[in-house]
Amino acid sequence: MGSYELSILIKLALAALAGGLVGLEREAHGRPAGMRTNLLVSVGACTMMIISEAFYLKYSMYGGDTVLRLDPSRTAAQIVTGIGFLGAGVIIKEGATVRGLTTAASLWAVAGVGMAFGMGYFVLGGISTVFIVGSLLFIKKLDPFIKKDRYLTVTVTARNRDSLYDDLEALISKQGFKIADISSQVDLLEDEIFYKIVVTQQHRRIGRELSSAIGKLEGVRKIYYS
Image (cartoon, rainbow, N blue to C red; front, side, top):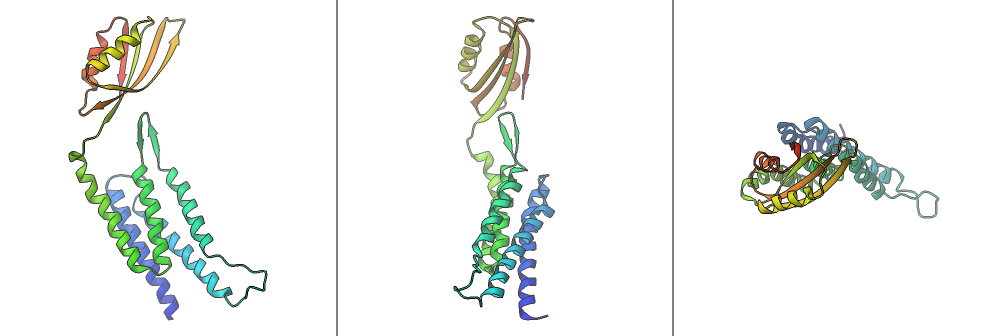
């Protein structure tokens, strides 16, 4: 095995190791893009950067007086674009909650690590891997100490009456919460009105407590919260 082939092997092996380490953490948390996905993204990005470098080495003898124009940076740009589409596939929106952003970001970061190893920047790739794995493992442990809002979606079905919204708004404000979003729908045949309310500024789980309070309002027939 020549020195060039050995360098390719080292690059791919390091890219696989880095992608596997990041993917192992995602796999442990049951995320859809786990060890295999992150490993493949890292190795794939590394391979494409090696190919980009190989094109330049192979055709570098052609001068500027020929029609051949080489731009290795285009490969890197297309990798970033392609990973964007892949990352979008793991993002899921459930009501007011968005899941998969961290997994998408890890895929994007792993692609960068693979590109670094593919270009032979081993120190950059190694340091990036340490930061990525470290952020996934340890920053999450800071969650209990970070003050942040929770979002609760409440769906209310009630007899259609004009003052219902005012009563709901007053009740939620009295509890010390804030309405982040609200939508409504009226059923003229059944004379019912449906409200979908997103409540925020609570720092504990208040779904059952709030539903109980709303249930005491006049005309309320059904309540669902998530």
